Image (cartoon, rainbow, N blue to C red):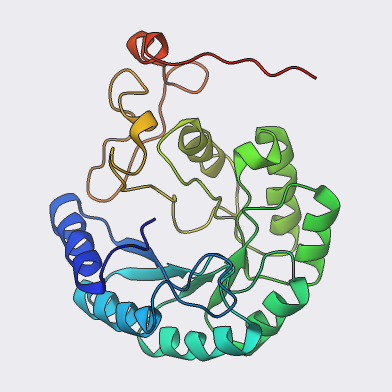
Length: 248
């Protein structure tokens, strides 16, 4: 998730996760969010891609996320660097609402161009899939409004022969629900998006659930087998939280 981290530090923390927990796929961020070709700081993308890719080695899948930070020309230029460094997944290279820009990048590159985390309208999803704007669809269960509507997107993609790798950016119910979703669809992508950020980045997600539904063994997690979503919110977490209700 971090963009405030130096390339060497990013490589080091991902290497530790590879060695300690067996992760065999990693995603890191390039560009600046909706940066319009402005990097987080000058030269960061060109520095972090080879630094991390080479540190992780050939046996690890490599993914990057630009969060809509590039114009098509710049994205295609970066895509050539990614290809050379063995990166196989290029997420949201251009502003997500500009399908024409993203499709231009998809058509130009041999690696997977992915996206869709921001989208919730089923008509928009139909267009994205019909026009092959991306190679891999990434709906977010919560942004979509639940499992039922997300399944509609997954089924549209399955009929088009496209994999579904949902967006799940933090260790809350979104990742729990995504685990169940991936276990239920025939076109599940290669990865579960799994946040590695700690309490300094997401303080509210700490101790959210009883037990440890996110325990990693050999780079994998298990779908919670219990009733419902298979997890229970920790009552102490609820007691320490602020309860707010919005009304129309």
